[in-house]
Structures are given as C-alpha cells and as structure tokens.
Image: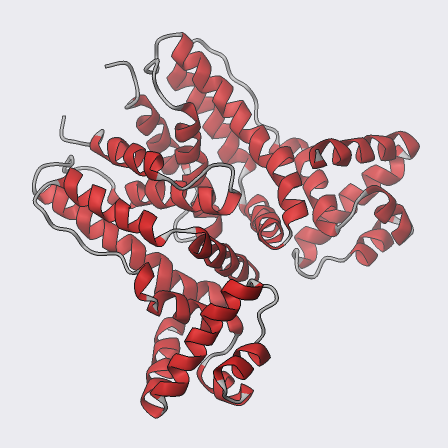
Length: 198
Length: 198
C-alpha cells in the first residue's frame, strides 16, 4: 500500500532527526502562506528550514507530499470526535470544528493538494488514504453512532451521506462560487436529520 | 467579463473559418482520448487538425480553453431539460442523461479541466461561467418548477440543493473512491424528495 510506505518513510525520518523534520514542515507551511503553492519549491523549503535538498528528498518524494504531511500534522486542522448522545449536537460540534479549520489558508492548501492529486496518480493515492478517508472515517463513525442510537434510519447508506456532506464542502472549496460558512453547516445538519427513522 | 470575451473570440473564429474551427475541436477530443490531457499540446492539435499553431492561438488562449469548448460543444455531453409535470420524473430523466454523458472519457476531461481551473484563475472564471453555472442553471430551473408545482417546499434553498447534487457528483468524479452510477442517481432523487412540503 502506498499509504503504509509513505507513513513508514516519515516515521523513520522523525526518528532520525525530529528537529529538521519539524523545521521542514513549518517552512513548507510558512512559504505556502507567503508565496502560494505554485511558487513553492523543494529548494525554497530547504533554504528556509536550513537543511539540504537531499534531506527533504530522503523523506518525501515531492513537494505535494511535504505539504500533505505539514497540513495534516497541523493541530489547527484536527477535527474532534464529539459523542454527546445527541446526533444533532455531535454534528453541530463536528461541523463547527470543520468550519473553524477551513479558513482561506486551508482552502488554498486543499485546492493545491486536489490539483496535484488530479495530475499525479501516485500522490492521489496518498491524498486519498491520508486525508480523504481519514475525514470520511471520522464523520462516518459519528453517523454510525446516530444509527445505533436510533437517530438515523437503520437502512441509511452512510457512504452516500458522506458523499453529500464532503461533496458539498469540497465543491464550495474548489469552485468558490459561494462561501463555506455557518449557513452551509446548518443546512447540512438539517439535511442529515431528514434521514431520521420514518 | 472573461466569459463574454471568450465567447466573442470564438464566434469571430467560427465566422472566419468554420471548417478549421471544427477540425481543431475534433482533433482536441481525439488526442485527448488517445494520449490524455497532460500529454496534449497545442502543437499536436494543430498538426492533427492540419492548421498552424497561430490559427489556434488566434481563437483560444490555452489548450484548456480549446478542450473546454470541444467538450461543451460535444452533443454527447448535452443534458435535456425535461418538463413532465412530475418532479420525480423530471429528475430521473435529468440524472439518466447526466449519467449517460458521464462515462470514463467525460470524467477524465472533467478532472483535467478542474485541475487546470485550480491552477489558473483566468481559466477558472471561464470554466465557472461556461460549464459549472450552465449545469447549475439547468437543474436549478427544473427544481424551481418543482417548487412552483408544490412538489418541493416553498422555502427550500435551491442553491444549497444544487451544491448537494453537483457536490456529490464532482466529489465522485475527482476522488474516484466510488462509481458514478445509477444507484447514486436514485439516491440523489430520493434525497431531493425529502425536501417536499411538510
């Protein structure tokens, strides 16, 4: 599995030189914010982090891989797993955290990573396993608890509901025709509640 | 408006030399299928169409613009506007046509155009106006007729419903974790029918 290889590679990197590893990830985030994804280069990341280019290439195959790890390791983008007993409450907390993590800087990174995934099948595989599936699993567990508590119909197709939620969010991030805002999050909660038991 | 400029440019091109114009669009589609988007070049399109590179650049600013026009001009990707009096029937016909137009060749073109839009803000504007909004308007009119006939709640937010539908479709096209199939289309019709008047 590409995912496993990728993770092992980084764990090894971390063990070998935790300080350089962190400096590289921080440099990638800083340069991304400053110059944007397209202008970002491995050379610039290396210079900013005070390491050699080969140090970066030893741990990551491409700038997209560095950015993906920097992004997913960033505490600000972590989403909690609420379990309050109420589906509505769980969803509201989950979506509030999603929105909080989803500012313009995050949207910029997501658009860049998706563009890269669309042009590079190997990176697409990493992006799918490290980011897309992780988010689907988190919300999927929350919805499964809703089914178990009888707050969602027992025969609901959770994978389809995940496509509706993440589809709408990604569509707004990518197409940029409308804001990713609280109104959207409330509308998504309302939509999911229409799948309650008849 | 970028869209207007783009359209004028092509109309002028069509008037000047309709045969070359068509040959270029057909060459773009043929080469796209044969070699994929990334390998596609203006040089190759010109050679295949039997025209000079400058003829293409006179009418289109980039290969993405050629592909966008070739794609939207292709009859196979046209979606009808059913108006049967039944929201369910209209939706089923609309989604059947969407699915029919959405084979693997179409998905490949859509992924390429989205990647280009994510990397090129000027092309993103054209893509938004020539493709994204055209599809939203078509389904939006269908849903508006559903509201007028009392088959959808009067206070429904049609723009949100369009985000749910096109979000789920685009998410499957881009992420490729699951098929764009009849099951998804039936689930989308069922989802929209949950917004019927209380």
